[in-house]
Image (cartoon, rainbow, N blue to C red; front, side, top):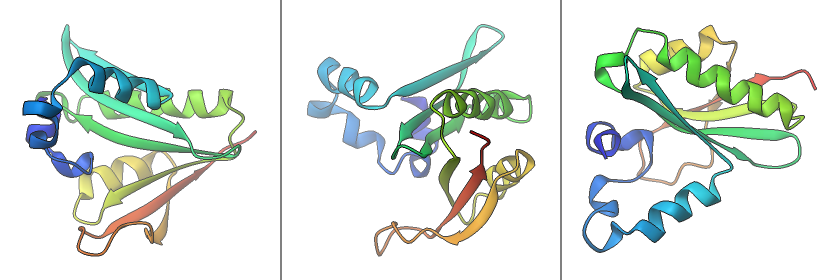
Length: 142
């Protein structure tokens, strides 16, 4: 919940979407069932970050919903989350890992670039009226 409160842009939805009638155990379980990989990182025994991955097709894995708690930023949590997704993608025999990131999220763009992601230009799948995002791609050896 802290992630949705602090950075709803990282998830494409709002905290209010998951509160009230939307806050059901069945819905949360469905989220974790429909996303093949969910990783929670901890730092000093506290939840410090999350990330998920989807197998978009037989050759591509998509990194989704990455968020690092403010207290853990700059402490290697983002690096560890990316490494977990890369390892999983390689085990899926994916050729590439893709993600979308908001143009104004310079810290995340730098983090992804440090891991070898290449800026592939505007993400054409983003709906009109949504903040502009970049598509970033990491080629993988299969």
